[in-house]
Amino acid sequence: MSDMTIGKVAKAVGVGVETIRFYERRGLIEQPTRPEGGGYRVYPGETVRRVHFIRRAQELGFSLREIAELLMLRTTHSADASDVRRRATAKLQDVDQKIERLQRIRQGLTTLLDSCPGEGPLQCCSILDALEHDEVLTGEPTRRKEKGMQTVRLTIGGMHCNGCAEIVRQILEQQPGVKGCSVSHENGEARVAVDASRVSGEQLVEAVRGAGYSASIATEAD
Image (cartoon, rainbow, N blue to C red; front, side, top):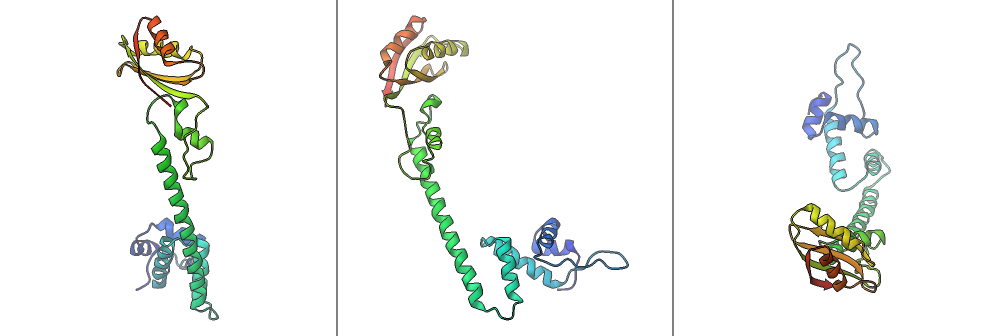
């Protein structure tokens, strides 16, 4: 391959010119001197092969520092294949460790999603709770609640707008033992996080009815 400009090198390898310059700054490829009479720097064909080597090594997970060491081995007469194999073996072990960690992350995320109700007040959000308690990667059940905590779902009639929903929300959150709630006038329901030792679903129903809305317990679950 004949001598070429930096733009042609970048095009031949499929990278941007700035990538070539970055490799130059990191000492991975040599920057040619500019011609005395002016003009473009001229790169030898070896530069293309060297950048291809760097890119393939990066795809395999080698860091730029490790790639520099591999490139140095190519020009070290005392080095042999065992030196390269030792580095490749270490990289494989590193990849295996990363895969193991990613598998733990995947299991942790799966556990979080399996335990997430997907609706209701944030006080009952198992995902936020697990993140706060640093249990995401354990693969163990992550759902935590305060002792006696429940989510009560109420069916509410008579709500016609967001203003009605806000009134119901305020009424519910004023009740002893209520940790938080979400109310939807469109669905005609409320989800209330409660301390079951301090308030019951029936008491919540009565509070809503006292404000002029109809209410009943739809579900009550731990």
